[in-house]
Image (cartoon, rainbow, N blue to C red; front, side, top):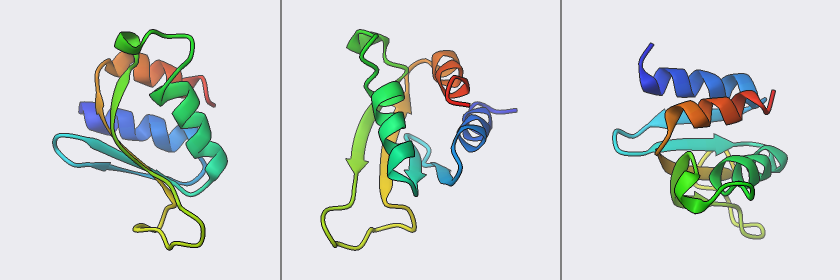
Length: 97
């Protein structure tokens, strides 16, 4: 299984309703539920127990709904990121289950 497919499977196994898109240089994860987006943000994107240089990913763009403004996607919460440490990312996603 390729790196992206392995990461995508971990996301789909860990979150009830989300989309993961390979954009060649970045990965985009989209969440329907605010709870899942917040969990991802505080536990994967910016984990408090790790130094920034130890984060498993680097967030390039984060998009959340503002008021009643319609989303640009089917999902309301979008994160675009590069993977710095695939094994750490997969481990952290497994802890969500």
